[in-house]
Image (cartoon, rainbow, N blue to C red; front, side, top):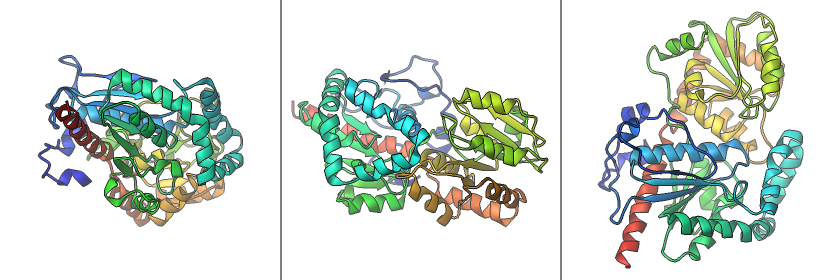
Length: 438
């Protein structure tokens, strides 16, 4: 569990089993404040493993934006982990761009989702052109004033000890907002891209930058973040993502009405059900095969209805948006998805091999090489190639077992827990400093 092995800080660390079983919950929304829960509210009533700082409960402000589902998912995972570590801590999750930013900022940020769905090539051009010092400085000039104003208001309202950013456009402006708000507060950045990433993620004045992979850690240092401020802790995912316990895979298949013995393929298109999911499911299930398919259409209800009407020769379970993806992954043997960092991290945490079918130009391009070169998956952009790769894996031979083993080795299933621990230690330090200066 990475940083959990270091006991010299006097912090008690919950066991992997305690973390594993204390994670069923329902996450929040735009600006959500999470405080101590009443008695009998569930697993979060466990004793606090991190001492509450002198002067009151630690206060954490998590900043994200709904420009892609990965940022919100990371914010939710970290909220849950923080509450697991210290049920007394107060966690606020806010979106200074899309939800609370000025109209011009909201309008510009809202263009992201339509652009990646309609013209990925155009998004690639925007991404690469924005990833230069002059262009990124211009972007900060456009977004800066409005975002700083919102962030200052959030700081004054919630008085956080740590501002934790999970979005590349927020780090520099958050630091400037902190400077305008009196007492010292920590700035912590959690990179939610996997390998290479936009320069907005790396801000040398941050107290801590969390890297998801060793390759990302090296990129951050190369971009002049001090090495002692970069920690390799993994990409935060819901703590429910974990390898199946003995017999659990078969039990989950019974629960979902699946055949217990068939090789099971999970086909995903993200929360929006994007990509070529329809063609992929048809290729895998139209004719009778030895496997079974679970197709996740996300919020694309039109696609779900269309697939549900098809009578596939291969057993196929068609679902829309679900909040039990960890259980579905543990019921499956391989996942077919695009190269989104969150989906890859979730699959690795479950020990699930990957077949990557596409990627978003820009931040997702290096993820394909990472998956293939790490030996945890294959790249099959064509439907015919996808069918052949599945046939090889469905044999259940050395290829599938080796990929599963490599996935487990690369995984950081407790990344959210590790990051939460570091965040609470920062909070304790800054809260103590604030108390001492009074």
